[in-house]
Length: 340
Image 1: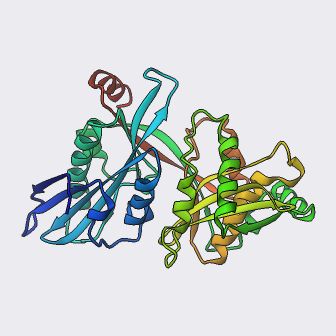
Image 2: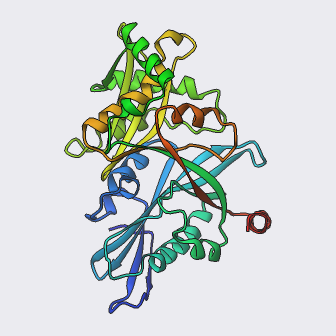
Image 3: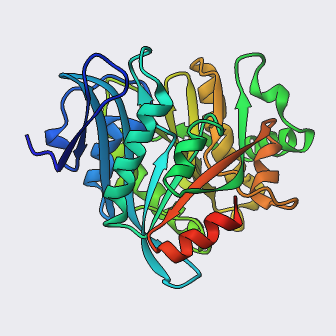
């Protein structure tokens, strides 16, 4: 079994904890877990998608896995020099399987391990979509990460139907689009997924800040595990033409809207961008998921177009943070002290 690196640590347990780093999917043993963002399935998707390099840290006691943390390294185009960089992104703070162990201590060891690993091959590390913004604060600071305040938006689906949470204007737009002939469906073939990916790529091409993956990413994610619901591609069609859509991940009892968009200028009277969000909302509600979260609600600016757009679906916003670590010590130290 090819493992890039191993490390043994002690965390007040009877047996030492061993950390293993995986870069190849065929070397990963069977692992438990419910969180898609640290799953072997998502590792395989990243591994097979051009431009992505996954890194999986697994903690073992003996041969028993007790925690795991998945990051992915990709190319990023930024506005400041250097303009093209490699960055490591981590969604959440890992998944843990042993209630006897201190999660923050274990996370601290995995964080140090991942930081040393990722900084050799990337310029920036970013932890995003944190479920608990207070978790790991001390160990992030210990490893010279700095935090920037962020916002998250999620829709509750467990108390009443999503239609009842919509603003009046949003209800009118959805009803008008459906009356005018727009339909929503789940993609079930390769051709539709490819056409959707190309359409969405054009929609994202003007948004420099947002990253858009290789189009095979959507196909691989949709077909990765037929026996387990991991992701769905939702389509908005008009006269058999795809004019909008979204891709949604499903993890435990929650849904996560990752990408969405539509040809809103060409088909303004059909509101394809709105239906692209409405489709996964209604699907998640019908399937019994508890919440749907938008994966990038943006910085806490007073005026934010996308956040205003998604809040009109009846969601709630809350404060969170993202943690960053740069390879250049002088730049990281400057920002570290600025955001302290």
